[in-house]
Image (cartoon, rainbow, N blue to C red; front, side, top):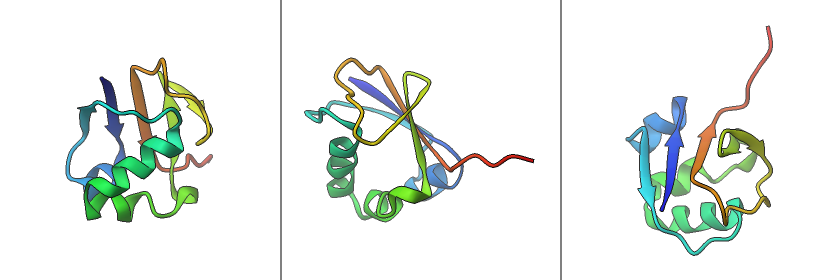
Length: 82
């Protein structure tokens, strides 16, 4: 089981702050493709990879990063400075 956490507009569009799922995905992008097939809300949220970032076990990661040992994956909008 992997815990997925959604922040900001991602949480609002998916309609929940988090969920636990079982997946056969080996990478973040494979997980995203699974999620996009789950429901139209996921498909819309994850349609543009440039519109959000991902962290695996609280460390920033690329979309091709392995999730084999992941316990938590978080999706959030890009951070801005100020």
